[in-house]
Length: 378
Length: 142
Ligand SMILES: [Zn+2]
View (cartoon, chains in turn cyan, orange):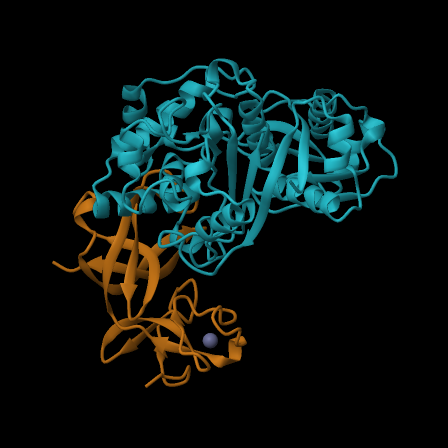
């Protein structure tokens, strides 16, 4: 184990809120430290991820915690900002620079942007100049899969239904009521075949993860600590993400370093910013062969207790909402609850090993800005 | 043979960029880039070669031709201004590269477009302050 998760915490994800960014981050951090059974005085290093906030986000958050003088790294890495902050904290622990570190992710995306689908494209770039939106990029991916492999519009709707249904049992999710399959299929089209419910909504929110070295975890852990088997950050390639995606090599490297394969993974948090993104993850993260995601889905394997790896068990981005900087941290919080057996009505039986995948984009000429994969085990 | 910048006759009138469409033998062609070090061909011309890291001055404009094949298409019904939906977006394989652009078609659904051949045209892409901004586009061959 390179490091251990001792505590996780978050605030409820919401639409536009008047609560200040620093207060959201501070509340999530206090919750994570309390969950770890530690005090704020134990924190030796902080990494804080956000995308759409002002500079010095981390300093503004730590002011709310009374944490003074600890080394702090602010991280902006698109939607992987939170997971990159976690990897940064892990590296500080692995190198011996810190025994206890906290990764915090925070964004008020719903406040800064309309709460509709995320479609922030730089109109100066070649793709933006053609009218490409982020939903359209994923619509193209879905249309290509349908045409090549016989997946259907309803397959994508089923993923939206699954994740929104799980979110309805997650009190921290932005969306507390699941639509019906008919409502999903009948919703306004955004970019074929994806409708409104196939696209995640922006949210305001924060989440945090407390990490510690093995020696510290052994002496201070309460028995609920979860090991980090591997944590990999990958860069983006110039190219079209329809044709391949860094999530394949990045997840393979994470499996290899962890000494596991997809067959060992019980629960997955993947970056379902669109329903088809979870769908493609079944293939690209190695849970089924290329072209067979619809079979994995239709057999119910990605559901809790479905006989495969359960995906996005507390709602994913589709159900929780997406405060970009917080997403990586809340993904880790979700699988930590699973591995501890604390996921309540959403518990996947026998969860021992988990994968967290996050994709960050924005520079449309790149397949991704950054991609992360973290393998955890109890 | 790779045509150099000066040899290509570019279409620039109202175009959002002056270096992406040229006229060769009377037909509008898409112009991409070819790396002189490693031969990598792509659209748009890269700022540096992603295969061998050659700098921009080693990547030369290259005609990708006027005919391509649609490999993915999606109808966009929600767009960011100044774009006015609905419109069809497609990935087109053309001249050894891939290009994303809008497709002019009267055939409604994306599924019927995949695998079809198309050709490069230019036309209005969007308007800014009543001014028409043009771009390369693709027209599906009948
Ligand atoms: Zn090259």
